[in-house]
Image (tube, rainbow, N blue to C red; front, top):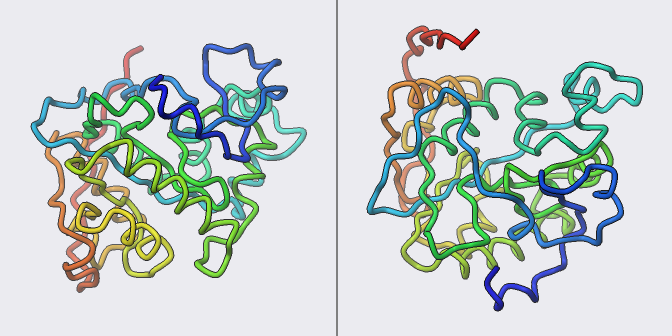
Length: 264
């Protein structure tokens, strides 16, 4: 860990890594989200990120934890495997949000893991960083418990909510310093409203990009589009948030998604 990053320790979330026993994780002091997880892992069966001269990380908008699927996984008496792993601190934030959100977040996470190319010098940055309601930016690999998930999702994602905006701006500044001026930052989330764009744009400026194909699409269509890109190994077209058209007409319906065979 780089010495100049040791001073960062203000995150309210008790984040954990897979290398630590789950029963001891809840007793750990709060850690900095950018420095508290293991290396990114590609989704099994998906292509490894290809070497690129362009360094790029992705910021993923959060899942809504007020829905039916969130209530299922957060129930105290839930006994299905993902809920049990969440109870014991063995489920990552990315997996949790993928279950809660379904297609949209699953597509974002698979896409980011397939195409991210973080700078090699940025030891604290990961390819898929998740925007949270009041926990700032967290790597998708961060292990969480039910208590953690409730805590980082307990505020409203709104610019008027200081519990959302201040941690996000704090971690975005730390991330900007860590990745340097040459790394692109791609927002995988809504760019039609200011709730993500405004705080991020003033920190990342022209480096903040979004997929041009997102304009005019709903959440489900975006999720399906990204999964198709992962299958084909072809990335979307990234354009600057500051100067590009973020609205558009609804595009044609996507063709059926090819089923990926799973090993027995």
